[in-house]
Image (cartoon, rainbow, N blue to C red):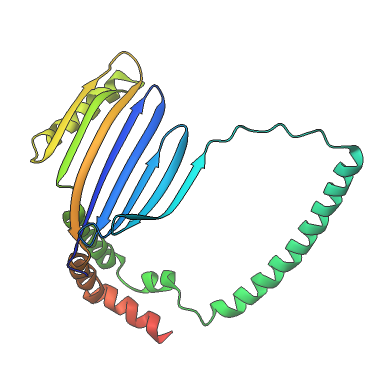
Length: 223
């Protein structure tokens, strides 16, 4: 099961201020699937097992209803109820704070651990983990087209200058045009990729067994 490929795909479009999103995920060679659709009118989440729809969640945008005006007596009642609730909540919060203070003396604190140890080593291992995960999760295909413009033409120029470094990479197709006159965001983004859950275990194992992280884990187990 861990070696079975997990494939994913996404499509994002923006037009005239409206946003539409389509996300598809498949696991176990398509035996288990998930589809998420969202636009300005409604959103839906569909689950599939062996091609059969298992569960569906749809939510449509509902118009806001105007609430009727409340009478003075109802307003007074609600105020009194709110005051009672706030009094009870303050008493409960005081009790919770007292119990938390008593427990904090025995619990493990990561801030104390970081204060007593070299945080640079832990930070370096975290950065390595993120790089290794991104290498496993990076999409096999990426496309971005449309028009982008920022409020400042200088910012637009800087954005497209940085984008030039990405356009030469393999399996990345970027066809964006800049609008230097006004703000604009008309995008069409598509991506596809796949990975195995078993392949993610190696980066996490290397991260957990590194000296600063393993020391943190041992301190947590002792407490």
